[in-house]
Image (tube, rainbow, N blue to C red; front, side, top):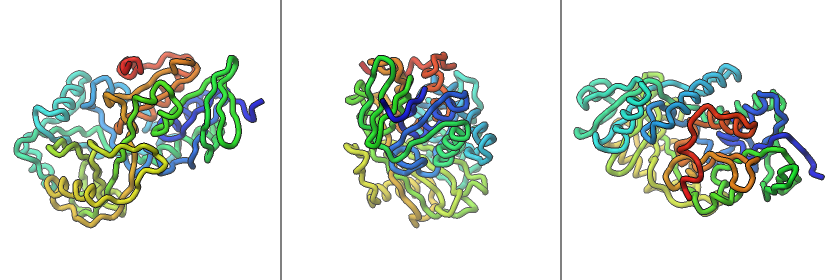
Amino acid sequence: MADKHFDYLVLGLGGVGSAALYHLAKRGHQVAGIDRFPIAHDLGSSHGHTRLIRQSYFEHPSYVPLVQRAFELWEQLSVDHGRDVYYETGIIEAGPPEGELVPGVLDSAHQHGLDVEQLTVIQARQRWPQFAFADEHAVVYEQRAGFLLVEQCVSAHVELAQWSGAETFCDQSIQQIISEPEVIRVITDRTEFTAGKVILTLGTWARELIPELKDKLTVLRKPLHWFAADENQYSRKCGCPSFLFETDAGHYYGFPASDWRGLKVARHTGGDVVNDPLTVDREVDLEERADVQRFLARHLPDVTTDATDHTVCMYTMSPDSHFIIDQSENDSRISYAAGLSGHGFKFTAALGEVLADMATAQTPAFDLSLFKSSRLS
């Protein structure tokens, strides 16, 4: 007999898992969550202080209804928990008029009736003189955008779930998931659990425990950098927006200074393949730092070269960079989200709700056809 039985188990308590735990607990279900690390840890993909959230989704218009629901849920989370997790800054997006970014933004905005401003480079330079826009670039601006406080989002979801009766078991490594006729058995390095339904939100460890995805996911190392910056030009308090640029060297994004570390910037594209997330190199790579400094010198020229902080995150990439949200091929009692491909955190409040719906045999309110694992067969 297993040590502990629950109606639902959530395996992995990062961005999506913490939200799924919250939604199940809020509905009154007997649910527990398991994670191999402490809540809001910095060893996976749900850390690094801030994440962008934006509506006009250049990646695909199908994401827009999902992110609109996420906006609602993040605002409700702030109210319920009593601490703000979302700050609206607006976002500048700039790149070639025939590129991927700006046309994608405009397509999503057109299909969903979103408020996006198109600016000439001259207009953009006048409005945001602290940015340098390339003559050949197109520029768009969306006010309904900003950043989420990552660790606070995770901890708030878990704390609210616990207040609603959920249990959490941290510092336990999941060894095996076994489908039995009456229950699903989860074996950790400490004990065993059983449940009627299981939700897998394992992030960079998904390929170890979701057999059908083992050869379909690639983990990339993604460094994040902070630099000292003039608060009169590059801080949230002075009205500096978040930003996303498509350049010849890749896609770069960043956030206005909001604490002692200053302005945050990172390269969204590229990244070294990670074979084992437990042993990823977390040291500063000076060439990676120089790469983002070259971007800053070209497009945010008054940001200093004084590096104040650094951390390493990881992207778990699907082959087409779209999410994978589905039920296990071998056991429909197991639902999962995986392969969020470096752009998933903003959605996690809504993805937790979707997975809670799937686990409780409710029909999610969104068209999830883009995210089915069968597309990868």
